[in-house]
Image (cartoon, rainbow, N blue to C red; front, side, top):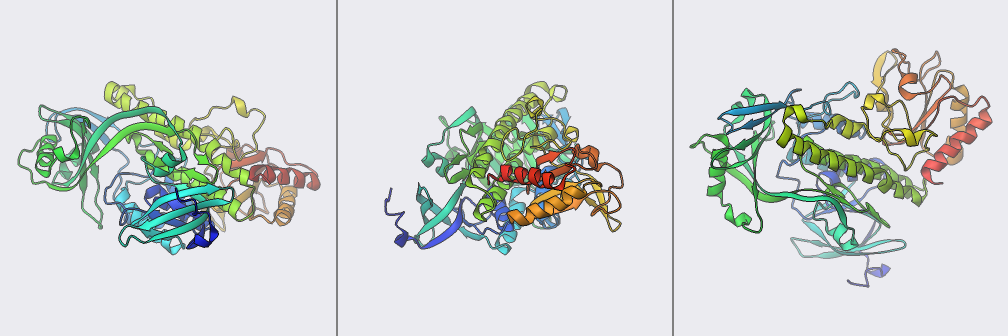
Length: 545
């Protein structure tokens, strides 16, 4: 490695954060960071956004995250129709005998626990939206650019990047670096971070194609099928079209990399595989892309190495069952973005950054375990044997340790449960409650997303006054609202707020920028000075000040 990289005279540019990888999670992280006022540099070795549909849906929780970042409407304009019921067929072929039609659990996409619905937008349609929004927010996105090498020291990272078209290299200095460079992450490899988990489950050839088979999926109200016949076996996935592109499809078949390579799957063979899967021997087929991929369950042994962090598939890979891979990566990106921004703005101590690993890695372990179980249950047990609930996995988890002020009984609480059962416990997602302002309904979730928010009940006057003093004393962006009562900032027409957040009319809830509860006191202090002390202590604890 070039030991001159840390020579300041060799830097061509300096940035607060260097992001390696500009695909779905890298773009999401960069946008979230830019919304917090920190403009990163993103290098992506591919020439542009995804051409493979890959991730095929966004859960309600993910849409909450994008809503808080201000881009829900832009995504909705691009999304295809997304029915509330989806089937997964087990068939001889798409046009042949149906063995079983398993109705997919759609609760992660449509739930009363959220003010928003999920959608079926695929990655090739979503990434251009994220790219446009990130560039508008000031993110420096450089495609056809790769990371060549990097080294770290106590103050930052020195990296060499190269334009893959011109061959020009540049030396970049950053305070932090984020590896969003996929399952084969060079960042993770160079850092020497190992992985644990089930490992390789199988290797697949993935064939993206066009064919006139949409009605066959529609007749079964399905978006996916597993097929097996005398010619081939595998899976077919529908990616619904929009005005941007027509319907496209993906065929996956298992192969043995020790016996075959992608060269053994020329276009002619792939067409025959598609015809065997559809059960229509002469159907016209247009092959768009052929690639290989590994289905695996792995989690990095750590998500942080000094000033470098891993997100998305760099940190964790899992089977596509349940569609949670990209959704989990976006949650990781949101968690890390607000923390990095708080440190870089001087609002938090650097120790806050260690809570990214403390919070997200246990969730990654659990999610990968559950998704593997879901895949196995689908294959071996059918509809009656599925116990995995993707809503609970995606929205119902609790951070057991991290940037929170835990409560005395916290150790006795489950890590995951139905989201509606959480009532304001630190480390859990803040509940959706319908509030009103000037006669207009608003979700409580719309109060969160860029800064800390302090909420108190209708009799929390001492808390309001104390919080304003703390805000000024700590010079911390903090929104302060009274919910309910005749002096309310937001009314509570259903009288749901106090119960949903587990506080009394004088109680206080502190919500982090990612919409997770950081601290609460069910009953507020009667003395305003004491209230100042407990709020100051809570914020200082969470921010490691």
